[in-house]
Image (cartoon, rainbow, N blue to C red; front, side):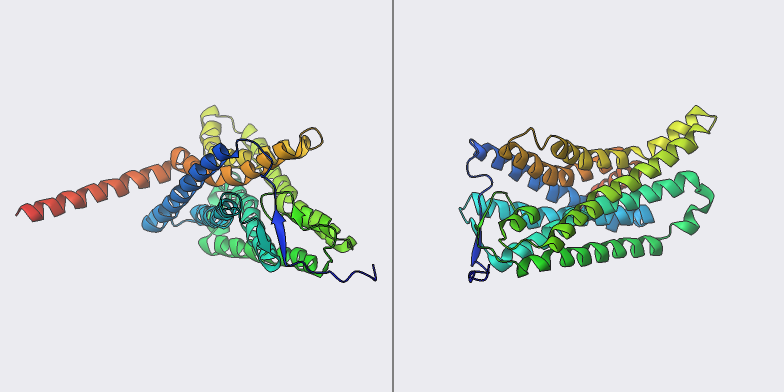
Length: 319
């Protein structure tokens, strides 16, 4: 190790999708997913901003979810196109870690937003009379801000030590992004602290939020089982369907990939992981628009106002 002088390479090479056949069809699909994600999340953010009735604690979390999805998709998908479609597979050393930080930050905010929405549903169903006191807009703003702070701080603690390692084994990253685990494996002076931090990162970002969400819905299910009227149970459960759909869309593909990691080849794992990062941002706004009555009513109201304004303008022109 004393003879190692090559510490920081000038660049890394992203080679994840290179050897997979017929990837051009996947890139077309990826482009479609990205366009739908941008349009859908922008629409949800616009609807929440325009409709004063949606400026509630719940929709503050929904707005932040749409923002994180939009920012995350825009940080990752165009870069993936640039790498593989325009053959810019050489990513500068510093850019790789910057790219890693922002991608992981936005991906990490998805489960934390689901935690905020799970807490919102828990209080709304278990303590409905105290909801307005316990879940205020100020509380939700503070909760979301604390999540961003936690994610940013922990990612800095995780990513910055990687820059102190010596990369003398290889500079080829077999992924579609600057993956933390794969970059760490390229180092020739593996640090136990960075390995521990990487494992802690996955626990903090994925498994702790999932445990909290499962605990919330276990408590909600137990509380609803005590309600005598079936109609009231169904009504309360319907308010959770959109959130449960988001939880399933985000966690099930990841759990499937991790569970079958030893039985699937590297290319299949790459495709599954890439889909699990781009599909939820596309489906989240669609689910909220279709399954949430408040947003559907708001969309109809905004479309009605727009239609009436066009009729008014047309009448004014005719006069």
